[in-house]
Amino acid sequence: MQITHDLAIGGLQQVVVNICKTINRDIFDVSVLCLRDLGEFTPEIEKMGIQVRLLPQKKKGADYFAFLKVAKILRDQKVDIIHTHNTQPFIDGTMGALLAGVKTIIHTDHSREYPDKRRYMFAEWLMSHFVYRVVGVSEHTSKELIKYEKISPTKVMTIMNGIDGSKFDIRIDKKRKKKELGISNGGPIIGIGVRLTNQKGITYLLKAMPQIVERYPDITLVIAGEGDLEDRLKKEARDLGIERNVLFIGPRLDMPELLKLFDLYVLPSLWEGLPMVLLEAMAAGCPVVATKVGGNYMAIQHGENGSLIEPKNPALLASEVIRVLGNEELRMNYARNGIELFKKKFSAEVMTQQYQRLYLREPHREV
Image (cartoon, rainbow, N blue to C red; front, top):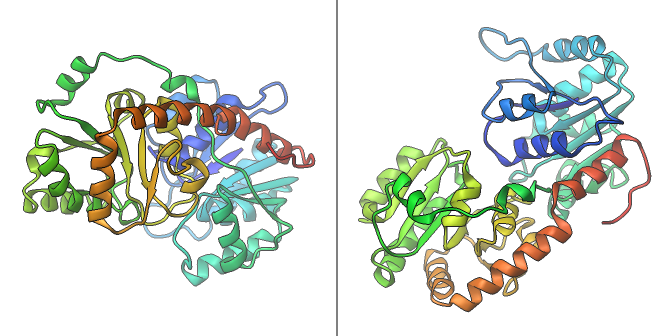
């Protein structure tokens, strides 16, 4: 059983979807338990014939006994293995699994900014004593689990995220897609598809836009996603005088098509584990400019399949975007090399094979 907060649009949730899609169904009878809500990816998993359950919700306030509900579900379904994703599923899932006699507990940390709240780090340190393995989605994440949460290095390992590349091996009618989105500008299209949170550093991209617009007056920045900062970012675009060049399109399920439309994917994050959006861009053959944070370097090799720059620097970000947009040969090389590296290291099949070995407690082999 995969245990997650929800199946909303996000990188963590895509990992759950891709495990469900590529796991060996002859060996594993997989199901998904959502602790807070369902979400947009629920129908995709259910179409695979995989059961998705939502934990019975308390009407008001925090549910401090959610683990008892988890335990009942695990017992009822006779679950042998659970795989939890991030903090609440780690805590409630592990406690529930211990009560239900689940044999194997695997946990994945999908990265955050450390140090986290002390009570969260203490709870995860405590839970780590009862799990078989704690997985970081990048070497950077794994090192931070050991450094900040003091989890035993013998428990921690790294499995890099993987995605279903077939979704991104498509052709699109770019004129039709532009019309659908309401893009009338004739210049380049750059984009980003993430949750609109402080972590993603979108404010620095907006601050870079006036310099970029000066070079490319008809450029369009497409921002896909929703989040706490949406209204603030829209106001910032207006205040910067770039509203005509910035298009907020909300959460999307058509990222493969958008990535085929973008001339450049820009990710100005402040911290990361190994973001799914970079893998998606690579699979789609969309050139990337990203910040040199967290595990981004594991996907983007600077000068080979994308550009990595320092975070929180709008002027540097603007100059790199302008440089890459102005060099078609470079963008073609980035796209070609990105597809090759993706197929070699970041497919969903590669990721799931490693998780399957953990579920079966087989010795880990480097891929």
